[in-house]
Length: 440
Image (cartoon, rainbow, N blue to C red):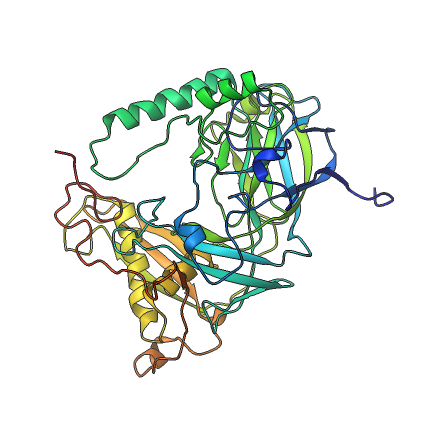
């Protein structure tokens, strides 16, 4: 150890479309061919494109966010054979480091248009928007959200091993039943296998077609393997215990984030980036049964931005939506209301609602479920670290605050500010954080 360079098991190219790179894939399926082999106990470097495969550009227009092709995502690096791994084992994944590429020191945060992806607050903020972030060492700043600077808690959004045929069938059956039961007028509740823009690594055309028919989308995390969990504390030094379902594990990773707030509320809400992740792999034989695991577990690493006691402002939200409708123990409604309280608070300093929405998605905010037993209201909180701003945002100052010139985030061509709806979800019978409408 230490006498030779750490091996790079996967390299990516910015000059070739993601769909033409055989070491990448964008579906979960047990038959996607191995992209490389890693020894039990080995530490390797894995290069990753951003989750869209390079669709989002470093510019001042959100046209790319508005028109992003979500049938292509996520582009993951892998799957990798972990030698000796077999069904029933656990794969111990220790994240040794995560870094952006030296020549790509930037990332992006986006708000998807409601008609193409949407987000947690799309009933109120339906327009596409974008912020570009520049990296300087551990810190990031944005020309689209001025007067803010913070250290990144860099992490992968997606880690997982391939499902077995049986687990894949469980996923597809379970999610198909939800889709069939959907009575909502304008909301997808899950995505079935979609053969459009399928990328199955080095699979031949016949196998690729099969994977397109059967492969699970990478959008949600799932209990059997983890996947797209977007856990901001899964950073450098963290250890993740992943169930193995197929021989060789077929481990994949991607969707790297420079920073993220709890909830990643705008959907494209972390500071998304391309980069290099360094991982050590160990196989724990029969670990699933020995630990009786039904879902992954993890131990956070020692690296985290430090904000001292009293350096957060915490906002509360409850299961009463913005129209005054009472919901029963609805944590989603509560967290949406918590988010809106922060937006309302930061407006007074000159930020637009869309700038704040982007910031809450990617800054190191702390989201918590405070109470979940006191009927009819769940209570959630959001902690805003006040030291990320270069001016005082404390309540004592906020009372007499004067608005600063905060510029603007990026919108689509011809748009200078995003829409703000006041009647979204009104009189709804069920809620996506405060509003859905049933089909007739």
